[in-house]
Length: 227
Image (cartoon, rainbow, N blue to C red; front, side, top):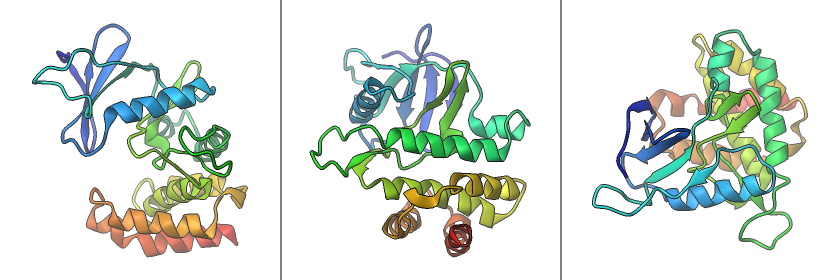
């Protein structure tokens, strides 16, 4: 489909206007499956989870690829990260909201597996992937979603926050406060989930050298929070 004005850019994708009330997220490279991602979003939305609506990208042309183009509802509101930076939300409130969103997600049944212990996992739930709309928070960027043990989802969110906290800088202390609020009830985080989250973050090709180097300190922070 024809793209409108570029309105955002991330590590791996760009976001364009796509008509009134819609945006097109276009991956720069075909590393995932946008159509499958949209199907996951529609599945969790059907079970009451707060995500943007999605729609087909339109006819396939030489310029389009359903594996990298995802058209979704345009949301109005800041990311949770921006709200924290601007003082509209405290880090503790952000961490508590992330915890609530994880618990709500893990009530959604798997879309493929019949195993009652398997749930839909986001695997990248952090403050920059939550939009604070007038109707409440909405979770975006489901490109890493899969099915599995909820403990891994808790581990990924905890490690992401702990990496920022361990790295210091202006977001170090706020990230530490978010981590504390996320793990105020640590029952969702399992030893296996934490170990797998650390392994995946270390192997993630989008991680910088400094981010990978922060993983041991991040693990220590998480274990300190767990007591």
